[in-house]
Length: 101
Image 1 (tube, helix red, strand yellow):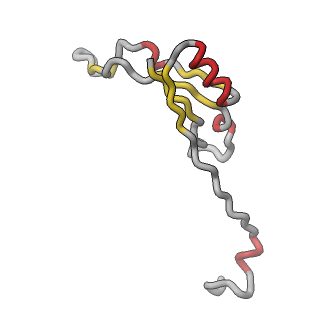
Image 2 (cartoon, helix red, strand yellow):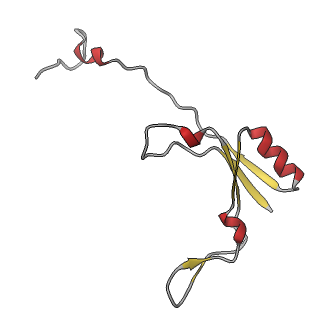
Image 3 (tube, helix red, strand yellow):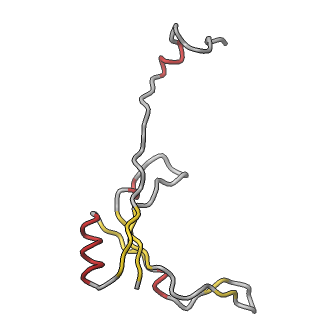
């Protein structure tokens, strides 16, 4: 059974990064999704596709995968590059575009 270990990105709906520090393990789907003919809903017989395990560290996730004899792949996220900004920079004298009302 193949699993994917990754850190989820920050959600676009909130400014905080609450859920993005944990590591998540997801099982890869073993069966394709099918459209139910009566209602048109998408369904799958694979119950592990609904399972998401959360770990505090990458080492815990790897240890769990090795203990359960799961093949795993790790997806590392890119580091955030935050440019320090100040409100006073809008009114600098040597600004490229002059500030006007």
